[in-house]
Length: 328
Image (cartoon, rainbow, N blue to C red; front, side, top):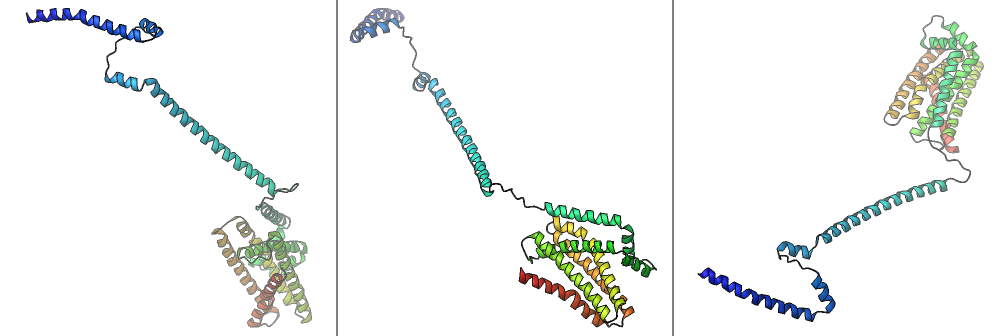
C-alpha cells in the first residue's frame, strides 16, 4: 500500500512541476530580445552531466594545450635558427678579416714570401750531386786518396806523387771541403747563438770565405817557410797531409749536414756532438801523421810542434771570428 500511495503522489506532482517549468521559461523568454529567443528556440540544447572531466575540459580545452605546445616548438626552432645564423655570420666575418689582413700585408705587385727550408734542401741536393759527379769522374783519385789515408799500400810514396800530380780533382775536392765545412760552421754558429748576421746564406758565405782564406794563407805561408829555411820537403809533406784530411773531412760532414738541416732536438744536439767526436779523431790523426812525416825530414821537438799547432791552427780561427764580430 505504501508503494501505491507513493506512485499516486508522483503522478499528481508531475503536472504541477511541468507547469512551473513552462512559467519560468516563458518569463525568461519574455525578458530576452526576440532574435535571441528565436535562435535559442531553434538550437537544441543537449543535457550534459557536470563532472570533473567536463569542468577541466571547459577550463582548458584541448585545442589550447596543443597550441601552446606548437608555440613552444616554434619558439625553440626560431632560437636554433638564430644561433646557427649567428655562428655562420661570425665564421664568415673571421674569414673575411683574415683575407683582408693577408691582402693588407702584401703590397701591390709583391709576392708572398714563404719562410721554409726549400732552398737549403735544394742546396744539399746540389752538394750530394756534386760529390757523386766527382766520385764518378775521378774514381781512381778517390781510390788512391783513401789508400793513403788508411795507409793500406806499401807504395805510399808513389801514390802520394800520383795524387800530387792530379791537380784538378785535388782543387775540386778542396773546394767541396770549403762548401761543406762552411755550411757546418754556419749551423754551429746558429745553434750556439753566435750568429754574425740574421741572414743565413750571408753568414754561410762569410764562413766559407773565412775557411778559404785561412787555408790559402796557410798554404802560402808554409811554402814560403819551406823556401826560406830550406825545409821544402817537410812543409810539402805537412801540406799534403793537411789537405788529405780536409778532403776526407768534407766527405765525412755530408750526413751530418742533412741531420742538422732537417732535424730538431734532441737529435740535433746529438748530431752536433757526434760530429765533434769524429772531427776530433780526424784532427788527432792529422797531427800524428804530420808529426811523423816532419820528424823524418827535420829534427823537431814535440813541444815545438804543439806550439806550432796552437799558433797556426787555433789562433787564426779565433782572430778571424773576433774580426767578424767587430765588423758586423
